[in-house]
Amino acid sequence: MKHKKFAISIKGGAAKGLGAIGVVRLFQEESLQPEVIAGSSAGAIVAAMYTVGMKWFEMSRFVSQFKLLKMVNIRSIIKGSSVIGEQNLREIFSNYFDPDLRLEDLPNKLVIFTSNPKTNTRVYITKGNLITALMASMAYPVILPSPVNHSGQYLIDGDLTSSYSTSYLKTYGVESVIGIRSQSPIPNLRKNAGYLSKINKVYGMLKDGIGINADLADPCDYEIVFNPKGQSLLNFGGVGDTSDRVYAQALTHKGDIFKVLDVSAD
Amino acid sequence: MTAQIVKKYLDLTYPILLSEINHTEFGTLVKSNLTSKYYNNFWPKKLLTPKALETVKSAFKHDKFTWQLDLGDKSGIDNLNFLVASGYKSLDTEAWQVVNTEERQLLSTDFSGITDINLGNYFKFETVLKEFFKHTHRPKYFLEVCKISLNNYSTGDLSSIIVMEKAGKIVAAMGFLYSPHKHFAHVHFILTLPSATETKDHLSLLKYAMQNSQKTIAKELLCITTFGSEYWSDLAALGFETTNIYAVLG
Image (cartoon, rainbow over all chains, first blue to last red; front, side, top):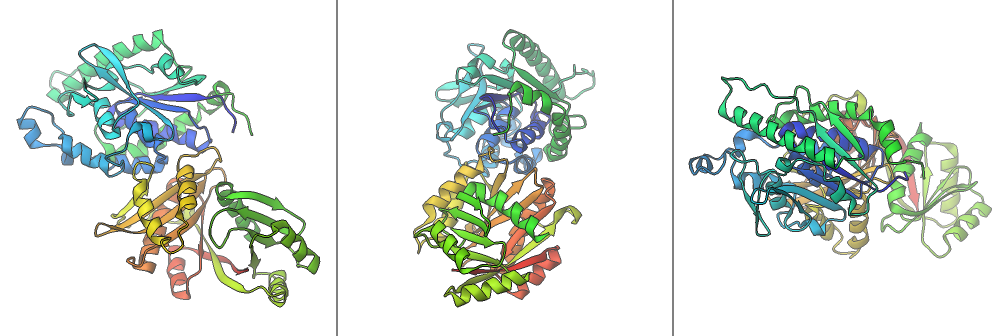
């Protein structure tokens, strides 16, 4: 297939955000090869899996290994660091990514979005250790180890500075940026909800507010918003089924994507 | 049926591996740089004649090549006799086994020890390959082709590699190609080291490939075997049917 040079930018959303695997499936099946793949938080995991050559069915298998209970680290909780232990997380990633793998060694461009809480700005990671970069991008305070030191900067969740970063990605010479994110309905803050649920919902409202403004100022060329209905934030075992449903939704965008990317047969 | 499988196989396998493919009046000519028995191959479609033999020879010039003969029809048998009389020797006999994965139940085998290979853990595949080719010193090109194919979507076909690990040692690898639009998958290669329990490990890898096929809605999975009848009966138990027997001459 011939098409415009394009980038894919994927936002996060824990297990819900991993439903983006269903959209990646459409790109892989239709021979649409992005020049640059970028993402924040769970979107960074999908972007990394995509860049290293995993197929969608391999991605689903990999993320289904994320068992929350196995990742919870009592020592880390007692220390007041995070609910999920750093070592537990590194071990899971190490099953699929070489612990020494660096972003600059990958054949295709991968950009991992993170946030610098000190300067309140987005940080674009394009070099350095892949697993550390992923951990920085998903460093959701309290739940996951945070902040993460990457190349001397202390970084947190890339979704906090939520944006597709279209202008930045176009500096790599791509003509179009396709944005992918899960639907994020306004959360219902119940009085008797658990404290983790409350933190997550307040955090979600804050980052969505930031993201809407950022994307209004710097819109992507085409946005795919999928509905991860039935998928909870932390049930990673259900991601395979969710991404199948998201794939069906992505197919409805196929015609528009082909137009945006000016797709033609060789 | 057989012709369709052959066409899908060529369409799926060779875009990644070959340097040239020509459909001539005598058959299909496949040129590949890949160091394997299939490199430079000719598939005759009708009865060979001395003229056809010369045409094929001149097409390959000084390169070595092999003949792939379908023994399921009369012209295959006649071609075999003709080529043997011309001095060609049988290198191999292979069975093309196809399973309709759509009709199979999702296999619930324990796949612990099998890992999907990507560019992040490619070193695991390299370990098998270097050991497998240690006497021939030819893994470099094969390694490169597999690496490129892992994240090359431009052909429309998707390539997967899996490895099997036992007691901390990688003992086998399998390549698997899938074409979403043809709904067809092909087990591209299976490499086992002496430390693997060959038949049992092959079957585990194949079951994994079948499960992948089911996820990818590939309707058919092709596996080319050169093994004995005992292995074939194991494959038959998985639902594989022999579509044809091919003789490879060189």
